[in-house]
Length: 258
Image (spheres, rainbow, N blue to C red):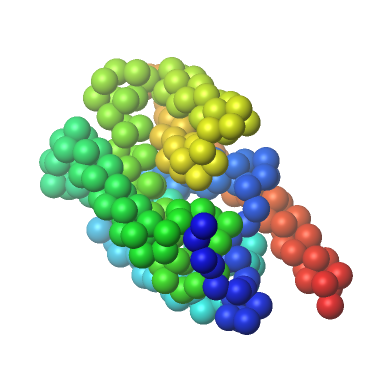
């Protein structure tokens, strides 16, 4: 049995949200925004990958600083950080692929190895990978390092499947959605909860990327032609609505606990 520090005595409360249907909806939409938002800023808005990547990385650093200093889960702060991680993770993979010409096979393998290394160090240090026990700063640093790596890995794996292997956006949504459904079914059938969570979490990134490309890309390239700006805006509106509701619930719970 892992010995965990007492939350109240350490002054920390769990820093991540409960895994509910709302969690998965926001997560998938955040990954879609990461894909379409990064494309819009770098291509449609004309900022280019270098400027977009630098600005987003700076904003992410600020968001992570604020997130790490908080002593409890704050919905708007947490999900803002996730959206920024999504954009930066996408930018990292795009910079390697488009800027440096790194093969998607190589980047997918490298990010998978990096994520496995983070998980190994995290488990060796803390004895658990459960997100129900993120209430020390060291665990939270491991958590966010893993999250960033899952976004970069998911972007590379998604592009590899839909583009390099010719799966296409529509089949990408079907295949990755089906794999997530299998992981969730395994969870409810008694499989390891931590393992099935992380498998599903990693797969939401290529699912979100395929969904974003399906909606935003032109019909010429197999998409529905909504465009990156409209797709990002639609998903942002839904994310904001869900996060506002989560923030309200968090405030009500805090008031009830007093």
